[in-house]
Image (cartoon, rainbow, N blue to C red; front, side):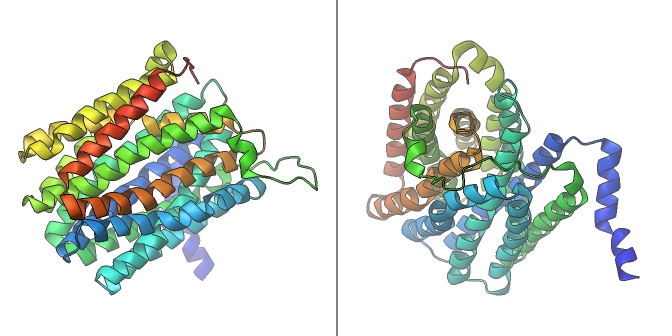
Length: 404
């Protein structure tokens, strides 16, 4: 009886909807990531604003971001090898389920210690989901379509960057911080339901034909020039991404903006990233990947320079949009570069190395810049970020043109 009830429950309804829409495997993966990214992007704003309201300074909020990245930084490559040798779906189930549980910790125990625990747990579990879905996108596409579909994947992230902060800003002002975490748990549950209902659409991960005595060394991948280029580009992009998501909310909260206004301003970044990611395929076809990245990073640097010079919501919204245009294209392009640079059978490991760089940035950048912000204020953080982005622009501008 219980089994029959379960089959006619939410999973069956979701499954019937998927069949009626005739979702393809790649469309299901993109749909799942779009939904889950809403929770991920909302959580960053929620944790930051909750910490600030609890009295946390720049260093403590930077520590929150560092904890979010520490376990993915340490274990991303190992998780990538699991994805290569076993099944991406295992990581997707584990990641979404545990992420939902992590969101419950600050609800039951509101306070900074609970935020630290939740941040560390959420960072590791979301990494499992992101790694598996990025590896799926690479496996389900061809070299000719890969850049386009990684752009679509990044569009899902932009969707989350728009809806997540706006939604959570409204939730904070009306339900307060602890209850807002329940909303993120509900989104995780929806993702799990869709994954379970559409599980038959997703193929098992092909297992590489490896020799029994084969030793996989990360250093072998780092010797590949294309892989090094992808990782360096990603690291520079993450500087802009991290400092925008961490210190712009802190700056706006300190000058008296409400959570709703902050959510709208942060959401314009996602709108801009959505636009620029639509433009990636035609622009890279004409100008090449590195030239597009060079121009984008220069544009983002321009936006960061002027952030601490204004306290007007409208101007900050425009600057957020400009930064989104610049930083927004870097992540999908570095995904493509990392997957294409990976040898056969090691795509998960290659993507995991890119993620390890991303999460390493989450560990070291916020803490280093948090200490700087405590000593000198927030403004120098934005200006140093602009300097780093301009350096990345110069490096990519000197790189020979490539299209993929």
